[in-house]
Length: 401
Ligand code: F0G
Image (cartoon, rainbow, N blue to C red; front, side, top):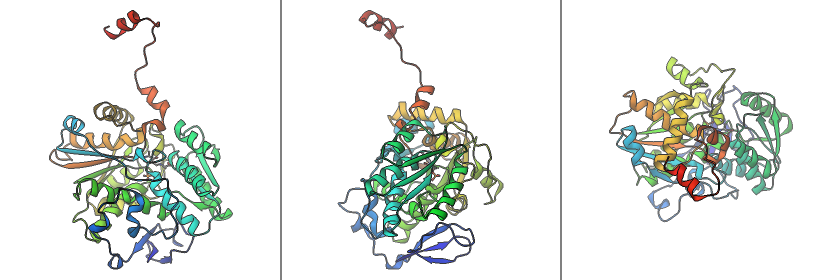
């Protein structure tokens, strides 16, 4: 049994209602009676990692709309750890999901819920990855999808994915925050099912990142988990996953949750520094990490609670630091990520340098999206290929120059 509960006023709603926020405007959370969930170590043994492995801890009843999401690698990054100066570093590469980002974990659950509720059209606003995921999963489910994008600010790979799978893609002359406001209105007025992370069921799928991480670390929990933040749903979801594994008796602690935003748009970092949970929306967000170019993060209140409950923090990094981290991860560890994902590594470097993260700590960084999502950015920050005549002496000349 599970139900929805407002994080502000505590009002409860049945899980059969199509609802994204409380009457009071507060965010909703999916609540379970953990004393009635029989989940033990035996539920983990001998089953490959995937979102649906943890079905007993998920609120979905119907047949899953699945493309085998989850089961992403947790890489131990010794060379990068040495360079940064910490004992133990892991990277959980969510870019290895079916559409190349963590959004698939939320979308498999969200679309399964949409079908349970009998919804006929799916919808979202997106900086790109949610669009790629909704289009793909709507194709798998055979249900149409409508996507609103900020015109000219969506990375090429993501746009291609959104288009090929058959969703109706509409680019608006505005930013992501405008697109989200408009799609919410359309969902209420047209009866579309909203699959942005405002929808609490999206986050339920994403919390499996924490479950998998614990299993991949042989039932250990890292000291800190660093997460890129945009709308800040993912950091909230991962924190919830760690709390639930503790509640059912699998683990004994929750890591400190560290959220990272780009300096060009970091409203949650500013609220954290000011010691408030009131966000001041940023009107002109700008960063190379277009995935998290979000000035008015809808899950800010949940994220700030996850950060303070876990004694974590929020930090910002510059675009230069993001590019440097992206290249180091690519060249020292062979892990290719898009710019937004590299914020977690850039944040780690900054916090170690400033003495906030100790050199003896065990850290996991989440990398949220694959390198191939944003090929234009990659080419623009990489050195150019060398053009020569098709002759071996010309090749030798540039090899030993
Ligand atoms: N990293 C990537 C690659 C993303 O695409 C996003 C969000 C985030 C991090 C931030 O996650 O919003 O849960 O804090 N992308 C959304 C989208 C907004 O439309 O694809 P968050």
